[in-house]
Image (cartoon, rainbow, N blue to C red; front, side, top):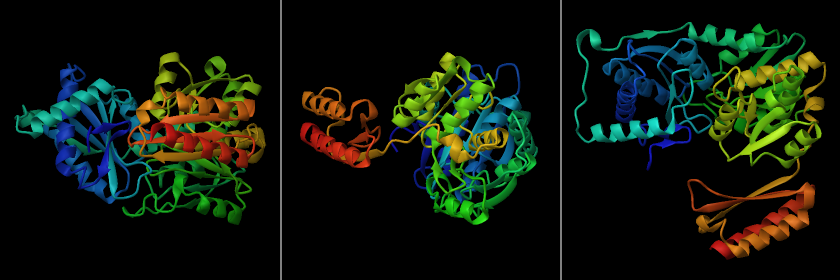
Length: 452
């Protein structure tokens, strides 16, 4: 697997890359590293452990719980809950550590382990590096210092986590959802119970699809990566809008009453204007990545809202928000972070806030989302090239300059080396799809010529 920790914890094929032994060892290592860092000083440590419904989560959860308890950490098992719920409960319960077992939108055979620090925030990179180092050291034979007797951790079920999280979500809403009919696609994932319950308690009439997880069907042709079922259900039921989550419900995409997709950029635009009206958009600023559609940037400029752009990845969005105290940020993929109420992307919270804007404004989601026009966007992956020379190739710089001159103010070019593969991603936006395809094709050829 190379370096174990990626941008979103440790992921791999369960029982092949990510084994029970690894889950146990990483959990013990995390407990020891946090103890060394002083996190547990002066008290008996507690961890919150949750998972999505994947079948492999059952044995991986058992391994994580065993590892933590063997290292002297008391464990609260919250069961199947979304990733943002585990983050919230870690902070709300004053726990020293949170652990979520999920591979998010990945296919069912994958799984992952994500650690949260006290307060429900992502562990610092240096702590992840230290956990990996300690894990490797002990995996090859160095003995652990193990507590005995009353020093071992105790494990108990914490069923109250479900209601505690739902009540938190409802407490954030600026208004109720009476009069709305909403279709929810839960991706047969971690929000299959939580999201419908929250929307119903908020007053909406709810229709659910993808809400019958069996351990094997998570993300299978449904959820935020497969919107066709949701579009059809919205039209069939005459709903006001549809909301789609991914397997661990840290994403939210939407569908308006006509069946048209509303992506993460449009959701950010709608929420930015709503939060500004409520004086909740600090510094009148929203944070997004460089992959956000140019139409989003133009809409924010027109509305007098400042856009700060980061590298691709919700972790970079969150870092920028925390550093400068911004309240709203996210990605085109549907990761939306409302930092006053969540420490990570929260798909259920995002969906509720979007529905609340529809209910409170008396305007359709289609009308609200029309604040921005999505410009046609073409993405081409160019494999087997020297991605390290993207920024230094004079030939490629000349081709990009020519493309930018042709596109003018209503187009954009982005060349991005892949973080994991020997390829370069060519992204072109233009007012016309044919122009976008033409320019992207020429740039892809230029990448092959200059870097091949």
